[in-house]
Length: 251
Image (tube, rainbow, N blue to C red):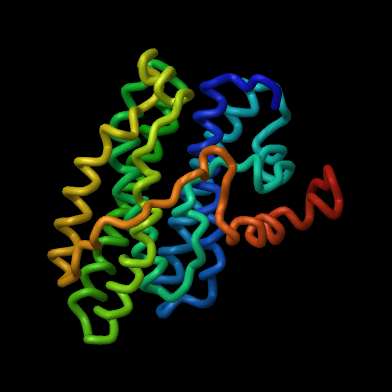
């Protein structure tokens, strides 16, 4: 996309977050520890996919570049702008829960503010998504507490997951020129304003779960600019295989 609309860029980022995380959660289908968890993760993934479709469809409309499928299946790794956190591997169940809880708390804080956007389309997507991400947060926090307050093994795995993913959380609160310009117009949410709320919720949950709050880490960033970890490429290769092999194929 040449000289993309700033609102489209913002919507694209939010859509990429949901799309990539939905793909990750879909890999748990048939492999979760219990049937109830299997269904819950699948439903959360579908919620995120629905949010992604809405954001990507709006981005495509603003830039006049096809539709949500074009954006989902027609871009390479460097053109995806999702946060690094959501592309991290599923790992074990504790890894998935830590990743999910971190992004859920962020989503709730973000959508709670985005509903007041002057862009009515973004506000509408956020209003619908807010109901969903609040449920997601209840689910992930519930399992964070169960694993943290469970056995010695479950506590150790949960702590390792939190520690390993902590370095990707700093990116949640970084703002660039695109976002700051939209913040001034009352369209976007300033991610820096989310940090205090996120930290309060996450720190409280960790302590309630018998877990230690990680020390400050060397935070990783670059996802919004298309600089990703080694994990996104294989995920996209699988997700985009059919459209890459048969461009334009439809049911």
